[in-house]
Length: 101
Image 1 (cartoon, rainbow, N blue to C red):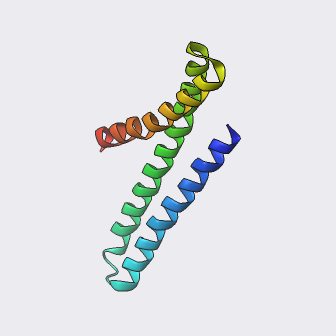
Image 2: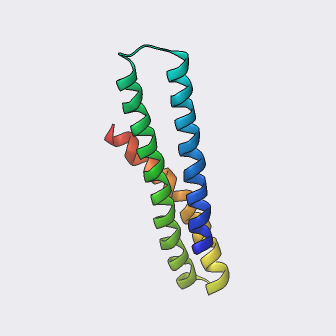
């Protein structure tokens, strides 16, 4: 599970780095001071969304691994449950984020 955490953390770092890069490049392109606070709000929302999606990925992967090892053979059930939970977590997080906005 530690390896899965490292993979999700690396994904989070890359996604947040891309969002920050887009934010900084927009600031350099457009020198409008009035729009800067709006851009910071958008960046904050995107980083929060990325953090929530990665957190849900970890939680659902853990739940899926536990259920999979309980319902199937422990080795293959844990692997399959972790993979299904890892895919379901960001989907559920995206659904909840859209309903919150």
